[in-house]
Length: 624
Image 1 (cartoon, one colour):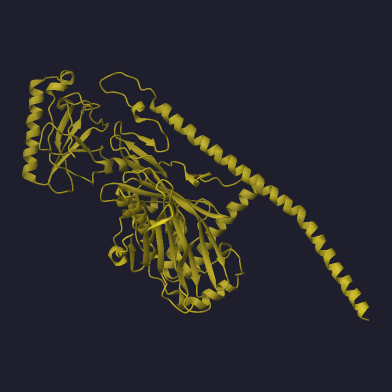
Image 2 (cartoon, rainbow, N blue to C red; image 1 turned 45 degrees about the horizontal axis):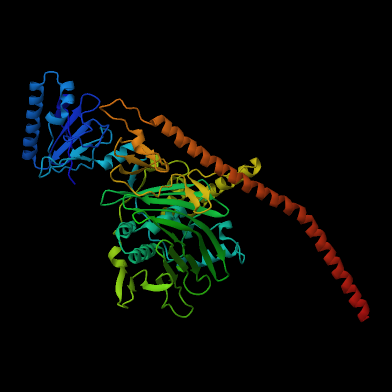
């Protein structure tokens, strides 16, 4: 891409710039409010920036110095020809303003405390030059969230079968057929050292597959790509029985991936309910053309010989370039081998994708290990249909290799696990020092540290502290007659739980620079006025922009737009509070009915027992 800008050199200064990167670097800084004009030589509209610095770099030092010398000559000419030329230059920008032609420059590590940088790219034609904005730096400066590279420090734990005895006895003391496992306390040595909120990142372990899906013109191959994405992360699951921490109410999590194309993917999660256990999450990369909103209703059941982990809920995936909406349900997990054979955790049940816009549907069946055979262990059988007619068939082992065939029945490789191990997009998390009290990593830090050290006693004690915090919160709600109101998700009749800044609009590269996360809110940095606007609102950025050269007033001011956004958020909060109040009233009504029925049940039981005694006496007398 080629860029150009028109700069008033009389309102700027030229100076060397020190940098840790190789090559020769210098900068042009504005002495007044602006030095870049909004309109080009032929009256065309250029990008407008509020920053006051242009950064230039050339990896070749001698060429960079020559380049710098040319700028010095231009500055000398400007000040020599125009003694006090600011207004004179402004009136003649269409014919006399100097143009800037530079080499291809990229500086990803600009000091975040410096002004927002703009780099310029050399072109073969001096009449077609455009501005390049260091988007990565601008997004970082707009956000108050400090992301650092995530540490993949999950250790290799002991095989579950080696600790099977202690696990069994700890569980048998508490288990009853059909009971909810969320109501019992698990021994710390079978815990996976992360919260279930964090574990949702496993679904996005190979998030790079979404870009080719969003660019694929064939709807059938798009569905095939989604199945490939789903199956690409299950090899990360521990083969032994490892249970993540049960998230506590109010717990939150956020993470980010940086892609090679310069875009960013974000994942935000919140524990919106404790009973039932519901985790809501939102993932997005509109620049690549996709986003998703989902929730997981996590329940576990003990079935005597095994335990089922049921993942209710769904995820709604939007492919923005095609205006398509996909729904996906989650498979189950099965923990088996409590009494016979090694203790194993495996994926079971089925997952279903469906897109009403295209008529495509995918059903993925997860096979489990048989009683006397392990041929089906860690394998899947899936099919993709269009309006009921089979289009693709998929099969294979999601720890080794997966295959597919179309109508031609030719077997092809879909995914080789050995080729994708370790080839993940770099993931970033919030610096531990900046995390809030309820963020997952900080909330469970003491438990995680103790597990890594092999200190089961400390891990159990710290885990109990968080569980006690959960109980105190529930008791407070019960005593005050209030209910918990999530911060970042609201109940929705269509999506289940909807992110408050939900945005499924197509990314507009002509007006938008990119999305960024700021304190759990996904916002958009606009290209025209370089201001952040909440993704959820539909206010047009043209209404927020005023011209440099004219005194035209905007139709809607920034203050008014912020008031509209605040009003929208207040209405969402009121709606959520109303829904929670209705649920609270329904719950209290059921409790009152239960209290009234309970004495009647006791009386009825006494009457039945007395009748049984009388019948027994009557039978005895008859026999005599």
